[in-house]
Image 1: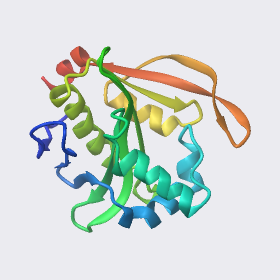
Image 2 (image 1 turned 180 degrees about the vertical axis):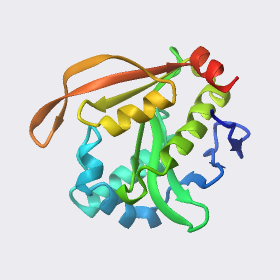
Image 3 (image 1 turned 90 degrees about the horizontal axis):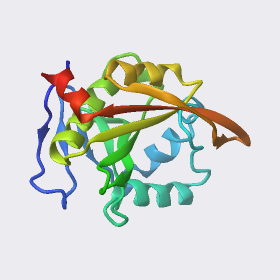
Image 4 (image 1 turned 30 degrees about the horizontal axis):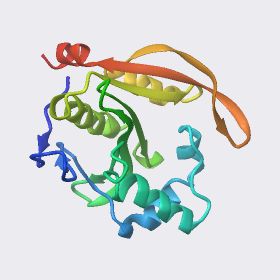
Length: 196
């Protein structure tokens, strides 16, 4: 099912950039600020996440720097820009956070322009990042916290082999409303069975 990604990193002290058949997963820069701001203010995108988007360009710049440009500062996560190889177009982001080095686990998050939904793009990107997490980082567990209304995202992680563990009641606050989130996880031994 999953193909191994070709990693260009030798050690995890440099930003790991790699590519898949159709995509380049690269470090984001301040030149991506306009994309970041508009992308995370697209209602279809933010409704599917656990967090609302930045309300100003200044807030977007701070988020972009914290989560994408300088992820090693806090050493808790990393986020890639998803670029279509053929078009050179930035169409989404993908990454992990809450990296627990003692327990060897992370939480993943991802988003994609609605015009590119249903094309297998996020499946392809996630396969590369999951492979990186298990093979290059030596993780044991990857989890995804998904709003229960986001059936598309839950179906995506299920296709990748994730197991639903349960529902976290009123776990996130979105537009002043508490929402339930589903918790999914994938363990390294499960991933090894999928790729073997």
